[in-house]
Image 1: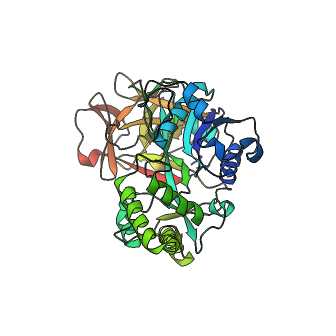
Image 2 (image 1 turned 120 degrees about the vertical axis):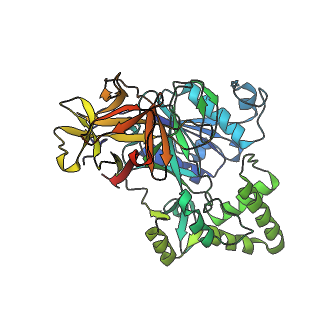
Image 3 (image 1 turned 90 degrees about the vertical axis):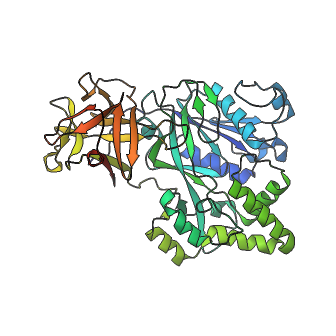
Length: 455
């Protein structure tokens, strides 16, 4: 199957906002990487601007907009009504400073999409970012990029170049928690499903909609009819939390004395930091060195085993030629959903009868499964280099009405299968290939399944 994004003729624009308290070498690696990906602008907020002079240490580029977050910045900077602290003051919590800086970038950004990142993260994309984002219709507010966490082979990285040049990353999956519990067995060093800095990921969000509830991960807009946090399988946020041993040690100490106050750490991270500090006070840097190895470094033999178990991915971030992940929907009649160009409707088609001149396979995009977030999906296909979104007509059939918005469907899961519904009418498939939203209920054996494959 030809990749649905291959022939897309249009591209969208995107920018990044980041709040940084880091060494210039780290910041420059971040800037170089994302400028190389084709980002429109990077809004760089220096959280501790007296640490160094950016004019002397940071690489100059017209696409990098630098803001020094000094006393004058916080006294004079615009205050946004959705923030939970007083106007004109520097928030104590780093998350609140990040919220402000994100909202400020959001208010001045000319790009269609904005991605909020941390300075110890790099975006990885299997295709040009602007082409991937073009898949999403105008009524999707945010696109969720899942995280990967770095691991190192055999030895600790000695400098930032080695930190960011590793090829090995842990991938979070709920089904793998028990495996990570066996690997990270020390009860006093609690981990979050395998020592992930975060497991939600980061989101690209639209700049054209005001934000009601800011977040480092899942911001929400005022409009309640927009699609939220639709998961993209072809981009990752690569997280390099531990960095060098010196940076790892300093981060632990900063969190202990609240030099860099992170208010929203999860319970496991707080307890882990507390236990590490107690042992550090007793045993010194040697203990921190052992913990760094325990958390972040595996032997080559161990890494190969973890790759085979699909717990670790091997990715060269300088290479974007990895195959894309596509999906296809299957009915309980062993047919695939496809748009029939002649009949101008979606049908169930036997795979042996599928003809690229007559049909286009239907793909699905779905949102995050999370409390207080709607579980939605939209259906789309490719025609003449354009992404087409499907709507349900008055008789319940799926058609293309040539809109840049999608119709959001309700999706419910059972095991590895799912149902789709609209206004309490479920999509039903018949053996003759007919499909429409007509049923008021759906039996388990009538559910749809999804296959992901490289394309």
